[in-house]
Length: 357
Image (cartoon, rainbow, N blue to C red; front, top):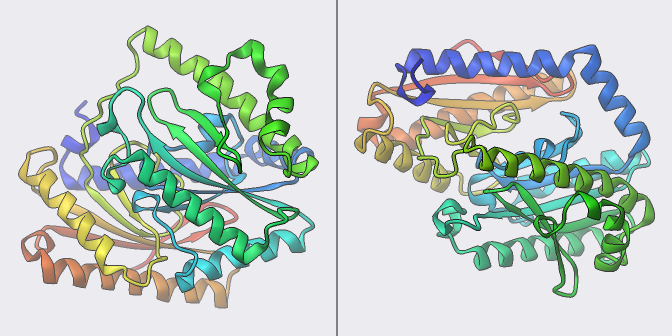
């Protein structure tokens, strides 16, 4: 069977929404629900991740966590600014809700890079890992400005993700770091003292709840290395994105190089939409994807039925219209082959609900 990007646009769209359906069904299964409830009972710290839209950065998989534990914030290039009004409100609302439940919050502020080839790193920063790290440190400082420097309730942690082996690197406050790719399974008993030395101000409960992620990543790295040894892992994956996603609720979509995901955070949404459209156009011109069309997909999650869902519907329709208008103005030839889909997402059930055109 042909790879997804080679198929006609109708088949690609069917594949994408079938992927969303299967993800939702798996999330709602009794086994998955019980696994989440058990995990949260044992590890009450809430975990959020700020990350690039790159499908390779799948923190739950790389740390062996149950699906649905991590709150994702995804955007092109992993670029965020907590001064953006909407982003600041979403983050503050999440923190207030978790604190209201008596939980602390650990924010993993991530950048990604490749040890084997810089061009497999983050295109959003021009493959400049130092620039990406500097940006994550700025986000960390913004977090501290909003939620305090004491870190007793909200702990911002800069974390690197090396995409070749999917290994994590934790950055301390004094320039020190803990690169899990340098450790092995025999080092698992040393994780707690290493973590305590690296992050001495990390509350004990948070440290206890972070340790399973690090242990899971050690096991995951070992599996990835075994795949590389068997030549079962393809590292140089060609960029063949054919979907522009705008909004939130795309955690089902971690297949690499299928979609460009734009979070609804920046006050200048037109700029990332233009960048994404330019990438789609270049993919078509280079023959990396068929020229028969691409998908513009807008999605907004909601927590409650009634007013919250109705507002999500209006927001999803606005995002879809806004992005379509930008593409039509700047890329009219691309707009001619654009398919639009608009949806709201029942966040608690991870159930996607397509809206009528």
